[in-house]
Every structure is written in structure tokens, then in C-alpha cells.
Length: 398
Ligand code: PLP
Image (cartoon, rainbow, N blue to C red):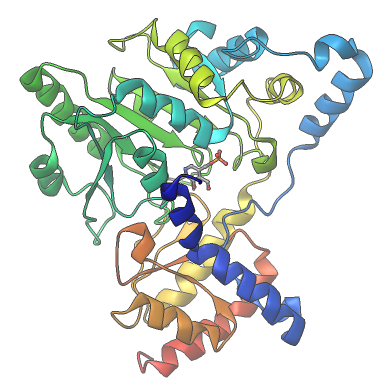
């Protein structure tokens, strides 16, 4: 007999996947060009050609046995050093390879970071802030800790500090943040991060144990012009950055990312070897050798991300003029407007009438909103505008 917990999980259908599948079926009827699928957060621009060239070059010039051989369990030494140097150059850090652990995307990085601070059965809690990535339920639940959700400040989607302080307690072992944020597109300001750091420094002293910030940063480079986007690890010593190359380099299928832990963190330098031990238990065994090496040659590059900011501006201008309330994103390729009725599911069902595929917000821990993933062509965004307008007219807001 299989573990009931996982059997039960197979019955919980992902709403995003459901909408995506609906879109595929609908495309057979009205044509793919007439389905406006804003459901999935898959990058829509190619990886930089330098990445592909690096892969080809490695295959053509390396000794095959060593190229395809096991990498060390903490990651390829040269990749770890190159990542440390890139972060030092760009963010003024003091990292060496000892601060870096190679992981299978942000998901793999988070699996290690969370397990390194959580002890199953101790009553540990991990706090996160709504709206949040729904997979956090599983990422945190799987460690044995309880996920505690701070309700959103829907006027800004910055941190609701009053609610946060009331939920912090002696069981809190980590605060899981995601900025730039999926689904709101909001970037936490320097003032927000400094206030968070001040509270945590105070509470660490009071409780007599560390409270780590685990900073989930797949969208770090997807920041729009003029947005204040602090490097979070520079504002709080006990920080583990969980980074992914999935979004900025458009490499989600290559499953590559890392953890960077601060030199000033309480548990440096033992943390990275601890991550290696966690890998042994969860069968992680490092990302692919070839991809680690290839990515280490393009660390200061990104895909051409300009389409995301362009799409954001077009949608924001048009939708607000149709009466939608939106906190303007500072990055990512998501936007999180308020629905035109209280029930987000009913609203997204109504949007389907116009072949607009939108994700209702309840799964993100913030009812009454919907997520638009505008990682699509600008042409598609522009053709969707009259449909959003009709939807607003349906509700009589224009
Ligand atoms: N965290 C957030 C907020 C995400 O949006 C995603 C993917 O969409 C992930 C983590 C997982 O990223 P990865 O593909 O790097 O595992």
C-alpha cells in the first residue's frame, strides 16, 4: 500500500494546470491564436545564445568521461567560485565557493535551506507572506514544519508588519520571502527589508535562537526601471538566498540554481556541508554537471527581458483605464489585479467567456484577486485588451 498522504495529494488538482489544459482543448475549437492563456509562468523569450554556445563548446572540447561524470556533491568547484565572484561583483558581497551550494532550481535550493533549519517533531514554524507561491505548502509541509501565512496588505503588497509581529513566536525558525513576488509582481523596498531585519534581529535575541530569512529569488533579475530592489542578503546576516536560473536565463527545464549563505550567518561555514548531507537523504545528488559548467560562463547575462516590462506597462495602463484596481508590479512577469466581484473563481469563469484564461487568487492566500502571467508576446497582450474591456463592461465598471 502506498503512503496515503501522497495518494491524497494526487487528488488535489492544480488549478493552474486545469486552466492550462482547458486552454489546450479550447484552442482546438477556436484556434490557439484566439485563446489568451495567461495561466503559466513559463519564460517566453529564448535563453541567451551564449548559453547554447557554451553547451556546444563544452561538448566539443571536453573529455567526455569527465564532462559527464559525477560532480562533487556540493557542486562543481569552478561553478561555485564563478557564482561567488559574480555576486561579489554585482552586489558587493564577500562570497567564495564555500558560500555556494549548487541545487536543482529554486525548488531544490528551498528543499535544502528549509531542512537545514527545521527539526521535524519540534513544533517548528516557517512564516511566509501572502500572496505567496502555492507550492510553499508542499515545500514547507514536507519538512515537518508548519507554514504560517501573514495576510497581505492589499494596498501595497509590501509586508503587513502588524500581522507579522503577532504571528512571530518562539517556534519560528525561518521567514520565507519571495521578492520580486509571484503572483503580485511586487518588489520589497529597502525600507521593508530593513524593517523586517530589525524585527528579526530583535526576536532572535529574545528567543535565543536564529531565525533565518530564506529568500526565494527566481525573479531577482526581472526588475523594472526605477524599482528599488535591495539585495536582501546584504540587509540581514542570517540569510540564505535560494536562486534559480529558470526565469532570468529562460532555463526552467535545465533545473539549475544555488543557495548562497552569508559569511556572517551564524551557521557559516558548516551550512554548505550540511546541505550536502541533506542531499544524501532526499536523493538530490546535484544538478547536471554539463549544465553547471555551462551556466557558470553566462552568470552576468540574462535573456532579453524587455518584453516583460513592455507587456506590464501596456496591461497596467489599459486595465486601470477599464476600472481594474492594480498595485503596479516592480518586476517579474505577473500582475495581481483585484477581481470585479468578490469571488475570484466566479470572476475567472466569466473571463473564460472571452477566452481570457486567468488564475483565481485563493491558492495564493489572498482572495478576491486574479493573476495574469504576461510572459506572452506583446502582440497577444495587445489583442487581449478589447476582451478585458468587454469583461469590465460586463461588470458595468465602464
Ligand atoms: N519559487 C517561486 C516563487 C516560483 O515562482 C517558482 C517557479 O515558478 C519556483 C520557486 C520554482 O522555481 P525553479 O524552477 O527554479 O525550481
